[in-house]
Image 1 (cartoon, rainbow, N blue to C red):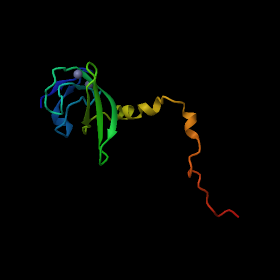
Image 2: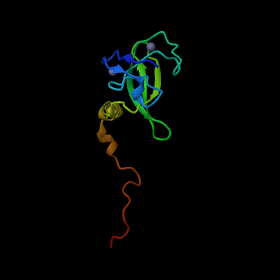
Image 3: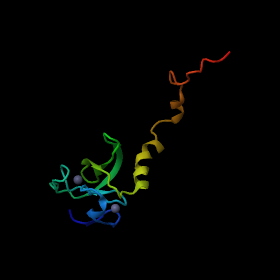
Length: 122
Ligand SMILES: [Zn+2]
Ligand SMILES: [Zn+2]
């Protein structure tokens, strides 16, 4: 795979540092390019910037990034690489928690069983 310049932040992305053959996004801003219809096939003619919109946890605890194409809305999932910016990854991961679409007060209702008491009281 060739090196490329990130269209989003201008970072030179070289595949050798990724620790993985799956370098397809910028380690700095985590943006990708819409060049694949299926991972690795280079079949897309869109070539627009793909935005990292979410992370999810694969079987075994490995993280993957969900990318969405800014132009056509294509979604794809990509494994994270060894040199991906951890701060950026975390900020994507906590985003839904930081901006909940409902008021948090409602979540504090007592869940059944959450207040199990010790039976030792005299
Ligand atoms: Zn970038
Ligand atoms: Zn696209």
